[in-house]
Length: 150
Ligand code: COA
Image (cartoon, rainbow, N blue to C red; front, top):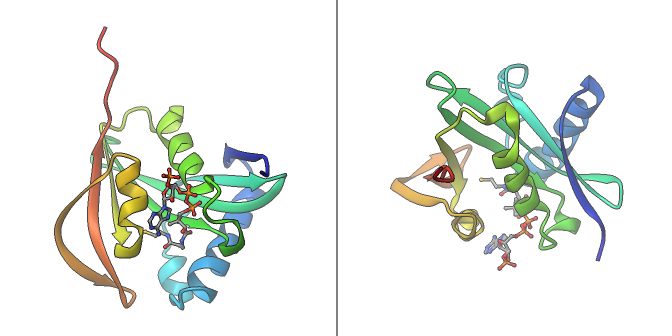
């Protein structure tokens, strides 16, 4: 099995790599219009990059809302050839462990319906009706952060 690592993005080059991966997965893979993917929120978001044996293969970003208490997880993407190897799960775990989002009490996301089982395995619960975004059916999901009792 390849060695999977995840890091929080620190440099402009790393952020650019996230956009390259998103373009491959969403724009080319799912026919999402580029201007919907590159929506103008990337500068204020936190980004993560996953590597398989040192090669960039996955990404995600988080927007902090509601006085940094809500973490909106977006653009979770793994290159098709590298799916099913735990890359997506490691990205989501790295997000929850990050100090940058330590103020978050609830993570929210709009899940493409095919990905519901992926997020459910990570503790997310779906709520509300199905809706359309960029021609793809979605459901909202959320996960409250459990803080260790002291
Ligand atoms: N349906 C059912 N289960 C799924 C699944 C799917 N589509 N995708 C992953 N899982 C399960 C895996 O089997 C694994 O289960 P296990 O813990 O029992 O072994 C667990 O979820 C973790 O899977 P993982 O290998 O970490 O997922 P991944 O690296 O393949 O990434 C996505 C999952 C959804 C990020 C990836 O398929 C992807 O990038 N898809 C295209 C873009 C997309 O749709 N992004 C989501 C937007 S909301």
